[in-house]
Image 1 (cartoon, rainbow, N blue to C red):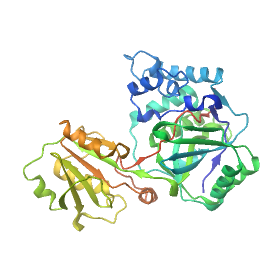
Image 2 (image 1 turned 60 degrees about the vertical axis):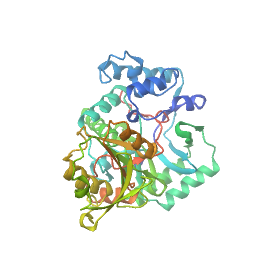
Image 3 (image 1 turned 90 degrees about the horizontal axis):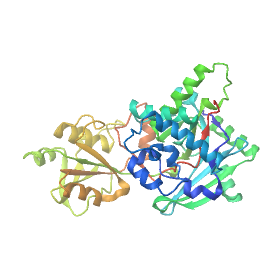
Image 4 (image 1 turned 180 degrees about the vertical axis):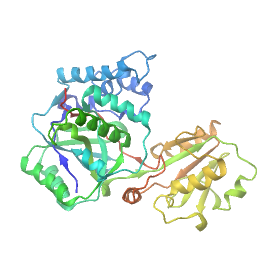
Amino acid sequence: MVMIHPFKGIRPSEKFSAQIATLPYDVLSSQEARELGKNNPYSYLHIDKAEIDLPESLSPYDDQVYAKAADNLQAFLQKQWLIQDDQPLFYLYELTMNGRAQTGLVACTAIADYTDGKIKKHEFTRPEKEVDRIRHIEACDANTSPIFLTYRRNQTIQELMDFWKKTQTPVYDFTGFHDVIHRVWLINDTHVIEQLETAFAQEVPALYIADGHHRTESAVKVGQKKKETQPNAPETAEFNYFLSVIFPKEELEILDYNRILNVPIKADFFTRLEKIFTVEKVEAGKPDQPKTFGMYIAGQWYQLTAKNSILSDDPVDGLDVSLLQNHVFADLFGIQDIRTDKRIDFVGGIRGMKELEQAVDSGEWTVAFSVYPTTMDDLLNVADAGKIMPPKSTWFEPKLLSGLFVHDLETK
């Protein structure tokens, strides 16, 4: 079973919540962040991507960037754009997109649960991306953005959360990017806090990382380092926990994560493709069932339906993204490592099929593949099996905004 931990959240003053909250650092380039932040002094990007306040010639990984992030965090607190609660709390964070709502519990989760395998992962991480967030966390002495976790729905927890939402008034209620409605409630009743802690400790055997593997690894490594330098600190020390938002998996939706390739198309390409797929011309490219794919090439959409010969019951090899990787990208184009190969790129499903068509029609890319979305059950089954999904297997929407919650590590 898993531990959750209330914390004294650093969060926006109610007056500034909509101006402060912004898209996460890892979905924006430095230039996109500059554009979003240049006319908004309240934007959390001044903390999360502090290079926007420094010369463009400076590397986003320069020491000055992390120092600026720490300075800006303190400035936001001094100006009371951000405030810190005076007692440990839990929070509820509801996001509503296109009429569909998901509500997560904002809490700190235990590094010990991660190292013990009770917080399960499904992706590998890249060391260079970890280093960036490690330096950011250390400079700010805070978890500056949350990890997106999930779990199998629990009735006790659901009833507590539903009751709190029905009987309390949200502290934030605003519409943000992509017309997503964001609402936040403070859980400040010690009895309810204790009930939630107990429910997780007694009834939830595991949590799963939905999104934020690099943030998790970074937060864990910072906490472990602080524990080494402070061996006499109690287990309840804040650095032994990291900031999370925990959603029941039944409320989450994974969108398709599509692929575009810049590769030469050989004369026998369709002949080889037809050995493993049924291939037919179609008007539209979005797959409507598993084990089917859209392929856009030379101005035409095709539907590819996997033949039984390439199907697998393995939780990883049987994924749609794995079928495409193993039998098309690797076998037909020689693309073995999609994390590093420059001949492939990825397009989140929220951008739609037109984005794939435009990429190919522009001549910059040769062929596009649309994929049926990975399911939440797929994700949990892979994690339970202790296996790893191919990179870019999942695209979650809506995105958790950054700036609504910061977890103070309390070591400075």
